[in-house]
Length: 116
Image 1: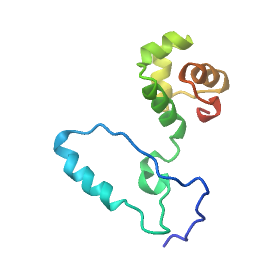
Image 2: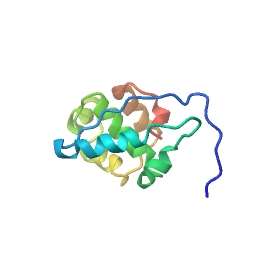
Image 3: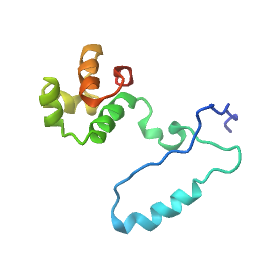
């Protein structure tokens, strides 16, 4: 049994956009309705998506790239980092590093510390 955790002051509701197959939509809606928090309850990202623990940098890089509507090839052209290296970074096979994070952050309009 998990101990109750302290609620963070910035615990606000956010909107999430997902692309799913139309056939999965009813199931997703049912799941989303079940997530409606009861008074005083909250879940951490690790509780909801345990398979992503330890992959925060890779997910952040892919998420920021998708937010900007860029392909890996376009991001490579903007940063001078080979597309193959970007792919490897997104898949956790290559370390991002501080200098690369700064180049990527400039192209993705985010704080480089989110990528390292």
